[in-house]
Length: 464
Image (tube, rainbow, N blue to C red; front, side, top):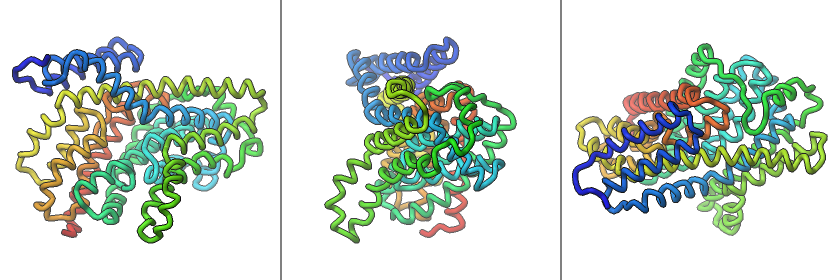
């Protein structure tokens, strides 16, 4: 039973932060173990201080949040592990990298990765984009022998920026719906806001950090650095063709984007409603990535001289690696969910909603603090949208700018309580410190740049 006296959720947040730093940084426990223990710890605090949150809830809520996380990312991560393993070791990722370099030149390899991840993230979830682009970043590093820091930053920046600014990505799409703003205008303003944020966080910051931090290529995604370097030295004629190499990525993008396409045209072509259930099935990210994984796995088998049993064993190794990544990612989500259950989101928004600052800046600030406190960018954006929606009538600029401010705030400072932090760390083969300097820093740059761009554009072109 909760104790009946005033307790600030901020205290829970501070204690949770101390616990996760002690377990993961000081004691260096495995990430999954440290995050689950931290989540249980927050659950115990909630059981003492949060009404209607019992001691039994402290355990069951962690398990439920972990299960919800696995339901969302379990199959995609496991299939992405097969895609990554297959594309890396078949030479498909290396073939794509060489295609980029032939088209743009080796000195512009980062621009190729940055542009690809930015565009892919419009129809595809951030995590799916990172799954698909990480093998290319690793192969690019094996090919040129340097600049892995830069490649990780540009992939992360491109995907993360679109994730919070440009519908039909789910976060900004849901916020635009709650705010009641025209979707077409939101997309246009989103693209204008996303470009400078992605450019500064990806290319500018990435190149600056790359000159100061050399992240080595480590074993990850069940592929060793030696294997990658061996593939990087193969003759192009021995690698899969360009179309075959790109096919797993193209399939994932086309299948996931197909439902959005069909839904957008149903008003014009009502007959499309007949195929919607089938498109919804194959366009589900679980199914789409499974199909892409099977295509990638077949290419891997076809281009490597191995027996069927050996091929099966290699895929099983990839699944083992993917299972660890999925467990860590879901544990990070559970930790964030238990922090949210402490009431930290309502506590913060209650304090800030009455502050007399401009609505655009207020929306960014609320979303930013909720994001830092509870971890999920989408949850922070939706929480803030619910608070700001009744105040839209007070805006003297177009409401699409409010959507941008909320998206920018919701993207700030991804850290231990965000499942995305652990996904980038594990798939990228990074240390915690490297993840903070790359991923956490770039999400913060995107957030601040997005706010500046929003305020600037809304001043020049208010469109009220």
